[in-house]
Length: 132
Image 1 (cartoon, rainbow, N blue to C red):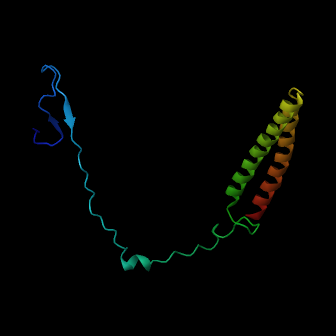
Image 2: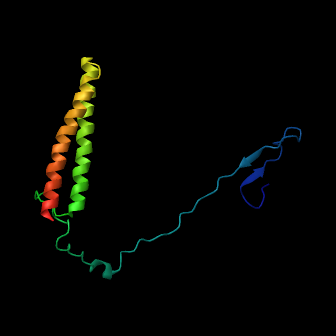
Image 3: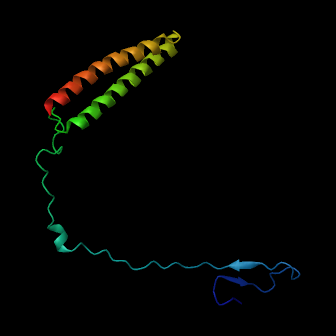
């Protein structure tokens, strides 16, 4: 005997004294929908990619030339300055950690990062401004 939904049925004689009926769950079958993947319309195959604009950054990688605006070059140089400081401070920390030299390596690494990064910052900024 089952109910109309087909999800669970009570078996006769499954209840112990009528206090707690035990239900048997019937499996629900899942039928996959029929989806056919059609190829794209022929018009999609005829679309061509646009050519890069003259003076854009497309294709500039690997030539050794930066063709961006001076502002973007300055952002890049400023990022290099910060990276110089962080890398050399990290190298100093590693030296301190393994050599047991206290804070001397961190201080020396930070100063070296500031000096080298500052030199690179001034050199890159001068080139970017003069390039216009």
